[in-house]
Image (cartoon, rainbow, N blue to C red):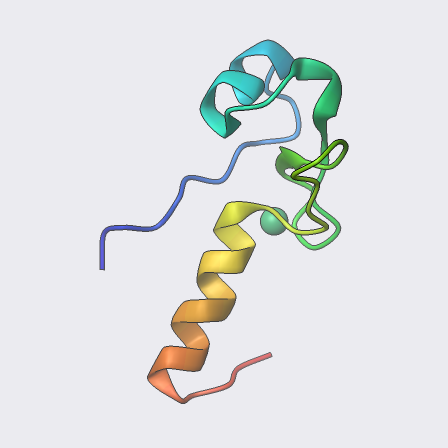
Length: 67
Ligand SMILES: [Zn+2]
């Protein structure tokens, strides 16, 4: 599978992260799971980043829960 969203490293600058995430730089914060950058504030706020969400979904699809 190559449709995985890319993980945004915590040291990435927020303006670039915001462009990728499609939000405002002030809405960018840390993923609670991998500490990567994600939309943490505002209307589309999420606790985990798209990459973690994708991993979770992919794992569920495979029926093999790993933790
Ligand atoms: Zn994450």
